[in-house]
Image (cartoon, rainbow, N blue to C red; front, side, top):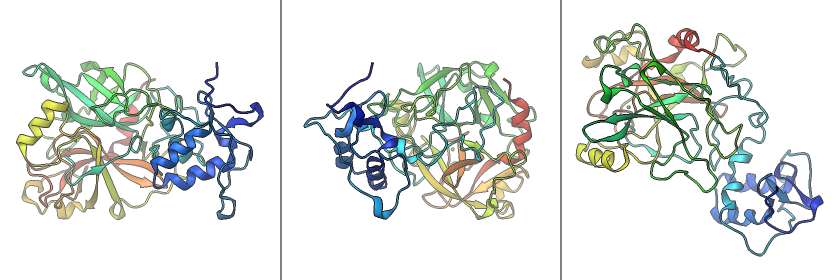
Length: 402
């Protein structure tokens, strides 16, 4: 049964995609996300369940030009509920020119999301190791990010000590050092997908709650040549987590702010042009600590279960391996490691291990590396060391099962 919100002639109550003035207005405000403007637009909802608005000037063409930007002609109610704010959030329109809403995402664990077909991570937010100097993110801005939980017996509580990246609807990519099956305190027991602010669930009025999956040791596949004794020099700090159920994404449910990230399947999709890694600026995200003050970090862990309650981001810059090896502590890193800067107020460190380093390619997020290790003082001018994913694409594909 439809959820009617205002009185509207049946012929004027249409899907928001077919109301060109409404779409144009949303495009105008989504860059700054003016809350008052979005509240006003909530007046236009005539059918919340079907995402319909009251529109007297429907137009199937969604092409937007400066000459055609107008204010929607609507039949509006004199009152409205704040709950409609999220029904009309710009995430719906951010993807308007893409195929993502119409694309069916496979539930087969062997599925490789294609950047070419727009099947993987894009910013679906309200607008179009340790994050030092990190800035706040928006809900849905990084829809592939994952939290990994551990039960710490001494505290009788679950702490989220590592991150990961959703790469399809069945698998999460992380670091091998994030899972030690021989020590219960270091074994992944839970995967949380679709989280943003750990103090709220759901994160917004119409958002779906984060999806939580219980994990057993058999669900975690570490690289067979990885070892705690050699990963600093040999590498192979990479692992996959097979989820016990299929993840629900934004495509299946518009209120579930989850999408898998893109990987550089360059050998499988040579129509995508990837720039050389050395010329890119990269983004690291996580819930890791933002200070070297251990007392504050411990307080935050006790309060939130993570060292930062809300997902944050920071930009890092690629460092050539030759320069990275100039640091005495990194002189023996392997060829499958990759370094990013740890300059003052910009780094990843403890608490973000296993998370992905991404670069943006035409608004899509391509995961390039996995946070592996660094020094105990983050943001102090020493680079961090990461697993270079491109060297492990064949290994990843080999592990994926239906």
